[in-house]
View 1 (cartoon, helix red, strand yellow):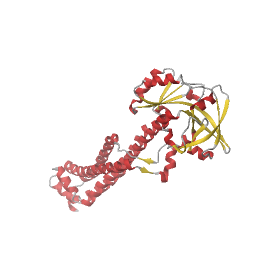
View 2: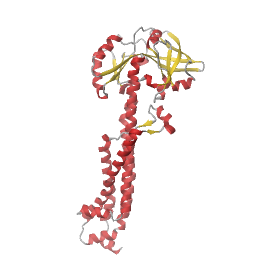
View 3: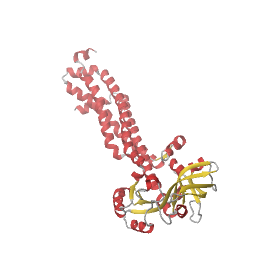
View 4: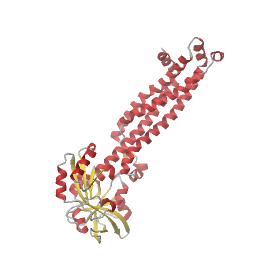
Amino acid sequence: MNFILAWRNIWRNKVRSLLIMSSVALGLFAGIFVLALYEGMLRARVRTVIDREVAHLQIHHPRFKDDYDPAFLLGDRDSLLQRLSGVPSVRFTAWRSVTQAMLSTATGSAGVQIFGVLPGEENQVSRLGDKVVEGINLDPAKRNALLVGRKLAEKMKLKLGSKVVLTFTDRDQNITAGAFRVTGIYKTDNTPLDELQVYVNHHTLNEYLAIGHGGHEVAIILNSDKEVESAKQVVQGLFPGQKVMTWKENSPETDYMVTSVDQFSYIIIVIIMIALAFGIINTMLMAVLERTHEIGMLTALGMNRPKVFNLILTETILLTVVGVPVGFLVTWLTVGHFSKAGIDISSFSGAAMSGFGFSSMIYPEFPWRSIPVVMAIVACTALVSALFPSLRAIKLQPADALRL
């Protein structure tokens, strides 16, 4: 009976009721859409880190990453890769030589990190060929070919065919230098890396470093993201003398973003819902004051205070809850559309996004895993919003109310 009476009371003022329901739906839409944007951005960032930057796993000499000393080599390449091929979860591997260097041109110099790669393997692991936007990918036949990032090219005023000198130390700590010619310019969504990393042919860098067929890093792509930890244990067991690192260890800032963004998202939703709660409370208090005479009459006819309290409480909760399915439906349809079409923000923040390693094209994803938390926040909002008008209603004195 209480529910039926509350439902009828809601539609006595259709405009006000629809306004509250629309506010709830809009607030829910805003909160969930923010979560969907974050979900899409983080999912894309993790995919970029794994598929185009550090791979699922990397193997190094235990001391190599301390200061990138070229002397800290891995073992025999053929033996190492053969043993990795026997691990079921391993899909692709890439053998690399890595060193720190100074890139010099007629216009200046810049510190860079050189990757000596085998183009065929590297294309499978980091899709190096897909990143090239000018010129061509590394050609093993061109001994001193160099691939540079667009940001570095702009900074150093490099173009296709430009000649640069790379200076670094070999495995015996002797300073050596080599002349290279830019044959390709690549671009990624991570501008800082584009400014830092350059690529040369593996055998060329090894000659300068005097390390023969050696290497400093093996990047591994797995069949599934879910196999990272288990695969790390298997690979570490195969090579107990080496250091095996997951993408989370190689890119800790990305892992931190994944674990912390949810918390910030929930804070945003709470702020939206608090603002919404004030609007609901204000509207319902006005409704209670408008119905002062009616409430006094009900009390005089025998409706006790708990029943009056429950009536107003039910009305407020119904107004809040009815807007929830609408908000969910609109958000789901909107996210479904933009998850395919994408949201291009390059016109006003593309440079800022790439500065943090994010793409300027965002594909939001509906945050199903966060819905229980969102529902809990909505439920708390509905309850808190209902308490104040209900308490105000039971404080009315029947005799005073009837005089109005």
